[in-house]
Length: 189
Image (cartoon, rainbow, N blue to C red):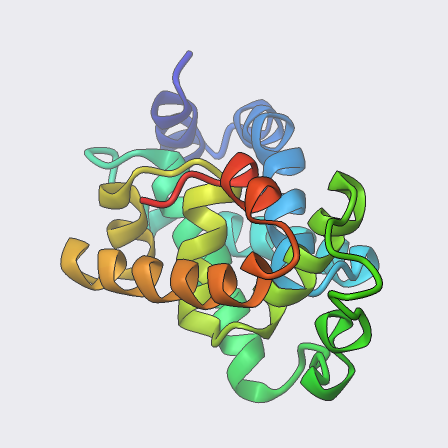
């Protein structure tokens, strides 16, 4: 049964097995998204995941069966992060303590892949929220530009622009450490 059919079943008949199946299908992916958006705070991400499915249950009437379920649920997730960010609930990363500032290119011109990915995650979290959302959805969650536009309620042009600037900022920060790692890690879209 498709996600949309399960959600329709839950909407019309309050079928508990349908929502349980949707949770089973999406919990891990949504948890990963929340962890990335919440600076690696797994406990907070678990709370967000539970809150998200409470919203899905409470707002089931808002789901449009003509649309894809995963786009709808990621829209809710993205809005939760945006609201949290605006309220200042998210932990701020202090850019004066950025790992990039602590590493000297003379001492360590080429980082190993694990260290590079750690730097990359840190720099992603330093992005402005709207840049971070599109970057994570595109490169880490593999959503299409059209899906990201739907999730963020923006135009494809805006998504492309935000993705371009996010990629440019991160590329500039990390290029000096290892251009090879950067090119291997993400395709610049």
